[in-house]
Length: 185
Image (cartoon, rainbow, N blue to C red):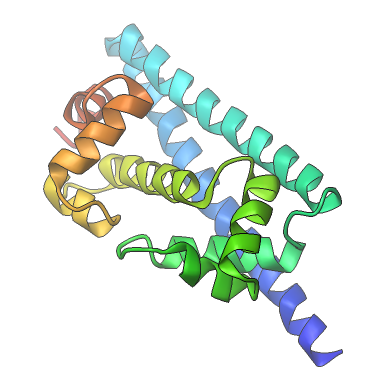
């Protein structure tokens, strides 16, 4: 019974951490949209579209996770531990074997279960989380794109830029510029 308690505690603390991070990112995007509305309506629309996209992605991910649990995905405590591990280790290389060890499953079984639970393969999820964290850092810090890229686990700024363009159809520099508040400029 002791073990079950600690797994429940992991789920609870991870949910709080995850919600806080998501809420902060959304709040920053909405605040940027509010500020931009007076000066640049296109930038405001882009901020609102990004916030909407993040919310939609989160709704779909949670829906897939709930369905995955019923269809042989990962248990709630495994999902929470894996998410926490990924978020705490974005800055380094994360292998499927690392994640399977956290979830206490074989690598092959884990990869199938992860995809059922999250709706995407482990690598795609890690890349998405890195991009989300890069967006958060671009909004909240004055660090260079190169520093941000390295801090979230990309090999260099070019790697971040390539994946960012694929995901958002614009460069990280342009995305950041469009969201800069007058105070940060």
